[in-house]
Length: 136
Image (cartoon, rainbow, N blue to C red; front, side, top):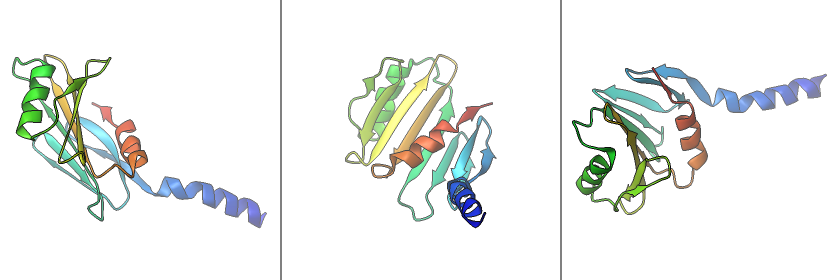
């Protein structure tokens, strides 16, 4: 019986590493325990407690520009690589010597720019955060 309880407790440990889902203006997001999440205007920033990684999500109106033009504009502003379009119509680019990756998606009504920094060695954490994102 003690072994069963110990096994169940061990299985629950990863669940405790994630905090409750936090609500923001445009979406909800599961933020890892000990990380901070701040919303300022149309930007939500999630930062690791040891500052080794951060994620920012910006929502906005593309102001009549298509997503490709917007991606080029953001890439130029951040001194990034030329944006590459994927099969789903999203654009991605890197900046900060490859330490930061950006993806932009959207349509004529809104865009979402997602920037991850410092997740090269911890892609699983980034994936879990992004997988939890739910639009309102």
